[in-house]
Length: 216
Image 1 (cartoon, rainbow, N blue to C red):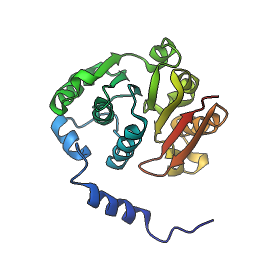
Image 2 (cartoon, rainbow, N blue to C red):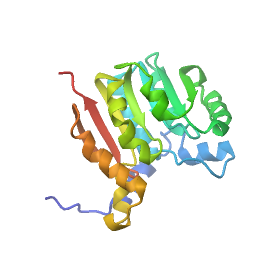
Image 3 (spheres, one colour):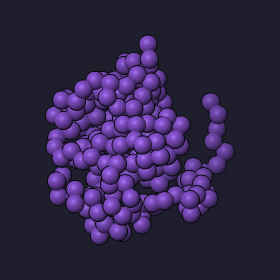
Image 4 (tube, rainbow, N blue to C red):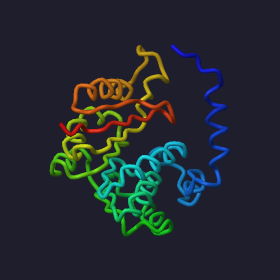
């Protein structure tokens, strides 16, 4: 086992300082523009940077996002997809936040590349056709992760990219203090390995799983 020779937080801060003028939009500026104090937590700047890299490699035409919130991740997904004539379909259960997200999409010039579906993601996802999307990004209620797992893979095209936020959240507390969300994420992480994918978990933000659906 290798020993990390530096403080990870210092490494993240160093990387953030290097890219701070390159990353657009930035999370804190985006949040400030919404004028909201309470909302589902978005992805971090470092994760949006990773997504931008992965999407420019995979050049997706159709992206599915599960859990829009204020639309920060949606915006980054759409900015990447826009380069290849692609679109993002995003599912959000909280109808009250849709207007705020739409304003942000207009501001960032991606409104024409985004379709918003308001509803329960479990129900919406179950009705979607198999092998429809090039990329699926899961960032909804954590208790829903294992519930929706098989459908997430079902609607993903072979060779498609599956991205999942917060998959290292169980490390925040010892197992005897896990709530239902922590237990669900741990179950999701283990169940994913049983499916027809190759995957890994990257320790940025609160953990990001990257998986590819196998072609055979």
